[in-house]
Length: 65
Image (cartoon, rainbow, N blue to C red):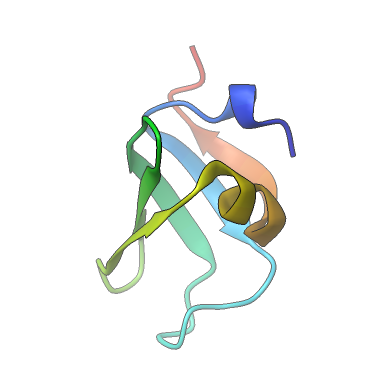
């Protein structure tokens, strides 16, 4: 996945599900690290761009401007 496509508000699908069962995450902060929020349970996780690129399967939607 290309990191430059990942912007604030974008909805991602991950390869493996979160323990709550959700696979959809929304990007809530960008910068040196990405802060993403699980759309099912609301848990927030911070990942480096490399980690996020490995875990993300595809961009589902969101504010892709």
